[in-house]
Image 1 (spheres, one colour):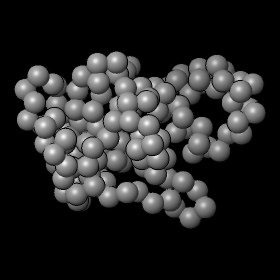
Image 2 (cartoon, one colour):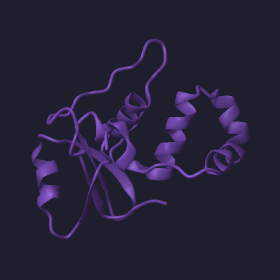
Image 3 (cartoon, helix red, strand yellow):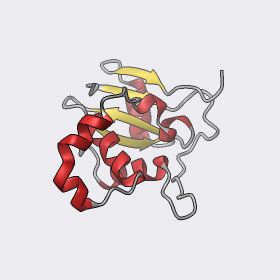
Image 4 (tube, helix red, strand yellow):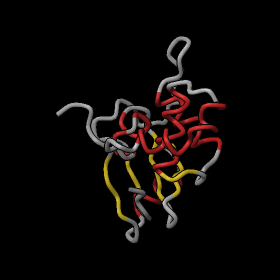
Length: 136
């Protein structure tokens, strides 16, 4: 499930051409805000599976004691259903962040206006995909 050595460009219909930091929604963190916090605070620190699971736990506000006691069970329950990749992430679809998977499958995000983003877009040795469109 963890892609290797590829770059996800922002969606063709992304509403912004510059990265925007996602904001929380009221008293609950949005998926985009959680993914941003995790990836911006720890570039190349998460595989896709690790990111999705950590995001799920934070979004559902699962208490740390429960995670410690039932981690494998929670993991198995969460991954019993297929999960979307970074092509479907709000970061790449709506907020102007590109996502790079390195050779170990670890993810980092890059703002669309950055030199690093353009370097990945122009790199002929890396597989590139656009994020999914929000509209057909």
